[in-house]
Image (cartoon, rainbow, N blue to C red; front, side, top):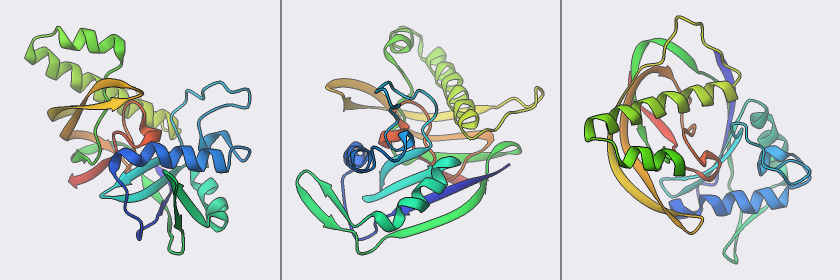
Length: 222
């Protein structure tokens, strides 16, 4: 199913992967009155819990904004209004911006596709972390496959994609355990590759905190 997708990159700026949340903070504040999609907060201050349609990432050191569906047009509308980026008090002129707009396929596939996580996959929350920690290794692997299926389906829902009842998403994971600091807490994360019969747009995020750059995927083979 074709899905509108816009990528906005700043190829002459180099940041650390961990700076993705600073991108979100900067642009979310800059255009706070423009759309809740940019900062995932509703007008009254409550969180917007739906899948983020604007995602902020640092991929291979390049600051990157990803707009999906309604978010794709939003990035196009804001493109000419972006003149500088300020991170940790340093101002970066945005003389070079790369905007790419296209329709991409996403959804169920009759074939298998292998993806890699370009940024750490935050698969667990506080509740299922305790459950995961106490499982035997084999069951931990099955738990990750189940979580990945759920995260793919959540992304599809955010894209407005609904599968037929007979279409079941399959996953096979090859993960390594990592950890990261997130909101002053140490969080268990994962990196690696997975194979699935889902078609996923390039750089789309899976899992928790995708608006802050976690869980960005890239196709390896199909």
